[in-house]
Amino acid sequence: MTELAERMKNLPPYLFARIDEKIAEAKARGVDVISLGIGDPDLPTPKNIIDKMAAEIYKPEHHQYPSYAGMLSYRQAVAEWYRRRRGVELDPQTEVLTLIGSKEGIAHISLCYIEPGAIALVPDPGYPVYEIGCMLAGGQAYKMPLRAENGFLPVFEDIPSAVAAKARLLFLNYPNNPTAAVADEAFYRKAIAFAREYDIIICHDGAYSEIGFDGYRPLSFLELPGAKETGIEFNSLSKGYNMTGWRIAWAAGRSDVIRALGTVKSNIDSGAFQAVQAAGIEALLGPQDIIPHLCAVYQERRDIVVDTLNAMGWRMEKTRAAVYIWAPVPKGFTSESFAEFVLEKAGVVVTPGNGYGAAGEGYVRLTLTIDTQRLREALRRMRDSLGAVSF
Image (cartoon, rainbow, N blue to C red):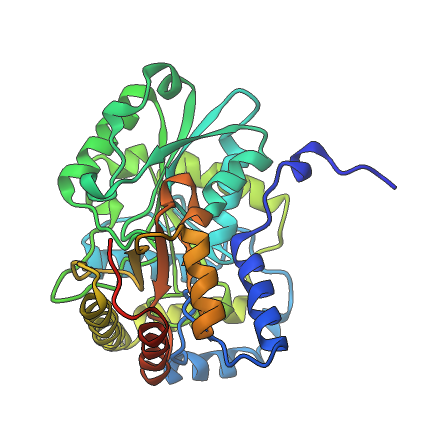
């Protein structure tokens, strides 16, 4: 049998693939599984976006290979969206690139700058693709621990100068997955100063930028002075417009980085289906009432989860953004043993925190992307199985 490449031997199984296996095993035993594991919006894509797609799909010009960089009209829509919502000016020709979902762009950016001996700075806990992209490029990921006492923000002063000198990329993600932490202007200013000192490219994952609660509006990295000269921001229509399955996103910011990423993509994929890009234009420039609606729905669900857990013995503050609850595990449990207990006893799936990195041990992640009635049922089952808990 042909031997696998070393990069494949070192590649961990993707976290959510393992969760899917656990769910399938439980269902095979007849368990009515309620999954709070994967952050996939349960509400439908808005009708105006679907209608736009339905009209565009019949146009013959969309049935051919698309532009590698994406339709200029789509990139112009992204630039206009940033101008309207964030006051950020972007050149759609040179500072915006269409992506087939932000995940592929995040994975491919390491191919542009990471090689053996080079380092990417990645958050721990963090979205697994930051590290996996670096591994596939032959580089080394240096883990920046995100701890509660630091507001789940990396402390740049703790990164050894020898490590920073070899670093090419710095991955940041706020509002954060999995912790739901947020970052303020002071943090981004520190990040930009650090990146400039060591000539590092910031790659900010802003997938949850539009989901904020109690009147809070998360910042875009690109709103900060110096951001466009320091790095890029990935964003997507997935969470803000309920379009996870449509696979349409973008990277925006520093032009040479956008160009490098586009070069990699032109050698790997053939671009996003143009009818989907046309639907993306409708999402970005059409009615925006979906965003406050989603924020209200997720805020209600956040309140249900946090209030219920606190009544059981947790002492949690209410999150300000994103679609996750990052909950410490009760005394006597590890992240994995708690997740296994909840699945076995309650038929509820939660994600063990150490699946996002070693610093995630002691936590589990619960998503808010589930029908409110089923969410209440999941919490009832957890309460019945656990009773009062201690920490």
